[in-house]
Length: 252
Image (tube, rainbow, N blue to C red; front, side, top):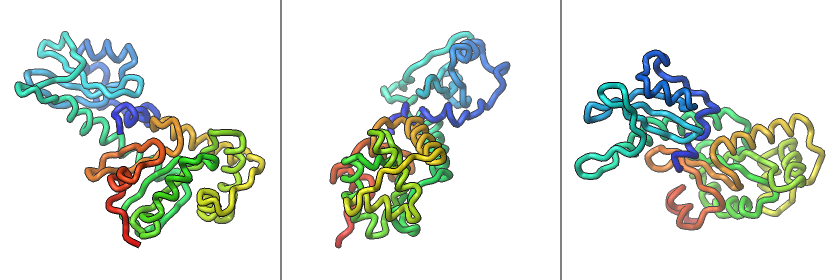
């Protein structure tokens, strides 16, 4: 996932700074006054002190000089031209924020599609009227049916008024999984019903989570790559991308 998308939920999670503002050098305090959220002090070469931070959801590494009077923002390169900042962003900001986001999704209400014994999990933001959501649902069947992946759907109603009404039908069904799968497969389209206050609250929550995660359309598929790093696949995935996400396609 792109760092800005990973970090965009950090403000919602309100990660506390590890030191009091009074402990920061003057340049860091000045950045805080401009809206920068300082996360953590980390090691840096060349007598620099580094601080991981977020600004408007975007990850930053701030480098403070030895005299504590100046701060640098940008990529720090070594003598071989290797970008040292990128690894700090990934390991100190992107990866831990991704873990927090994953934990947040786990705690929310989602619709299960697939075995509880599946080796992998993916969270999918789905609109009942979204054709690309239906395509992804169908394309993922080999992995779901083989018990290798469990999809966890957050239903949203963003494409039209009818989307919200169909979402209400799915969310209030006795068997939400069947209602969702029937709609996605085309077996039985979800009916449009009145959206109750409770359902509207859930749809709003799902939408806020989706936007907070940096996604703007459906399907928005969140999964972990081989290293455990949270990734976002926006839209239906190609056959090659599905293999990259979930592994080799199971044989029938």
